[in-house]
Length: 411
Image (cartoon, rainbow, N blue to C red):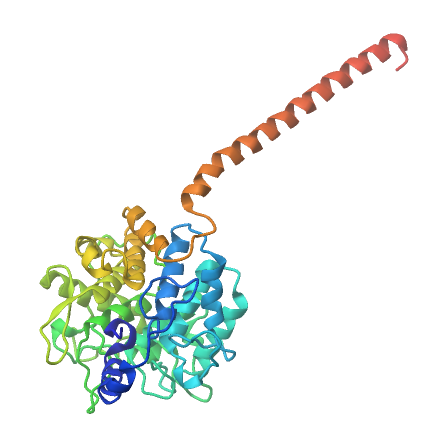
């Protein structure tokens, strides 16, 4: 199912418009068979790589060793040029126009978390570099204007791959990745309650309007983070609002202030929205946005403000069954697990739910913990035995030398 969380507002609109025209033809097309190794049982056409990457990242952070088939499915989706599509059926050839920055970005983060896939990670990073816009941003599909969500995810991937976003720019004067992110952030020219927010894209006149999901997803990148979020930094204070005390404030939010500025905006939005963000779609009633709220919590935790994230985390836990469809939605379950891990909450049930949505893992955290004492005991016994043997050899050698001296006083 197409969601704003996956495609962003522009891509979602395009897909819906295409669906209106092609609806009758698509109705006769049977859904694809769910591949072995894939997490979740729903149609993977639009989110296969996305949900697999989130699942592998979350389970790896939970010290679960995923099945080889699960990892092989993700690596097998990568195209020769380094990019990932949202989904590619078994045996289907890669088509560059269907590769997307969102799938590529989360796949890179998953493979970094798993470890042992450096070649695939390097190829993915090269794909991101090759498909960056001259203004420093990324689009969902290459060749289109950039957006805050896609740019934020790409920056997350660069951080995960230990590539400085400030060094990633088109040759011959292109803007870097931080510049690309900054072009979507509202600065001092905006009303005070909107400063620090991110727009999805500028409108036709270049104006920026705050967008909940864009702000939340871009915020993790602005805070210098990636998935999984596991930071020990703690500011013990609210995020700093953007400094706009006089007319000398720059038109663009400086990178050094971007994370705090969007954190301040998100904190205000959560406080005024009963600790969750809201999805507003033209022609539809506003409703709680689970995905945006989750990314906001991750970003605030990453930037050292877990207290400001705690209300959102508690709200997500309370609403978890509705969001994850009782643990059957792989992407939502993985996303919620990443949030609770970052908040250092109890993750037992979510870990079990997500594990059950895919192939049996090679190893679980419980199995590792059960095996560890035995190994330690074995190692300890071996060390003590070596000490005892050494002492016996020393004592035996001393007795032998003493006997030899008694027999031969000249020794």
